[in-house]
Image (cartoon, rainbow, N blue to C red; front, side):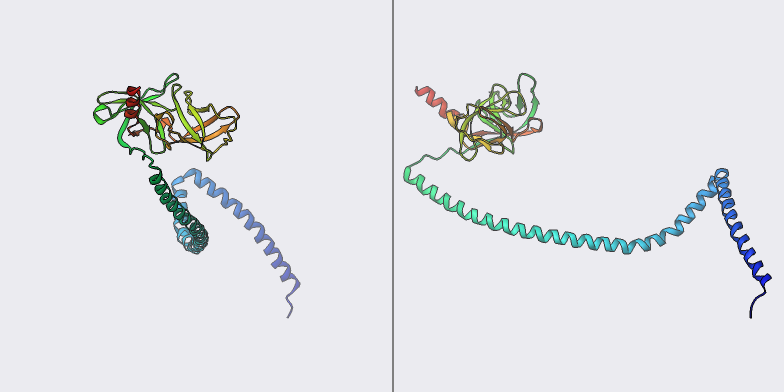
Length: 286
């Protein structure tokens, strides 16, 4: 049964008015809330707090699945990374085991050859640990004062090392303290070997954090990354003490980054290889 045309027309008019007044009502409600917020902030704050308290449990429930999925994906990624690292570590371990076997074989061979040649073994080092109590570093000198002296067996010429490598040598030894000249001091000169070829050179301090190599051979093939160790020439230091790495090189010289940084020196170790005594006996015999 069809509705009368007048009734349909009234319904359309009512819907139109309702929609129009709803829009105007929303605008009015917005202005009313703004006025209430300006007039009484306590009521607005309480309403905001109540709304937050009501919405928080819902958001927490909705966030739990997302958090669980995120943790699951993270665990899968970490598992894949661990498997990859495990495979790499297995490969590295296998190579290290091979090198260990080679090193043991070479050590045995070296021991046998030394016995056949009657080679005199290097003297064992006696060490004294000390704390750095003063740093007199400046524009013209770089040295440190340590809490070990003659009563502890410290003597002039002994090597001073930190955990990473050579730091310097003892230049003055008192009864309870000693002064160590750092390898970066302008007066420091240390015979060294560079790289796998063992090229000889002199490590010369220049009062900067990076000393230089001088007196390089004409055919020296030194490149950045080469390791620098003491050569043991002239009996000043035992051979093989780590010094640093080459960071820049040209035909005449090279720049070295020491393994030991002066600004991080707190504790040092003074090594006595008996070389100072050997030098003194040699000088007396002459």
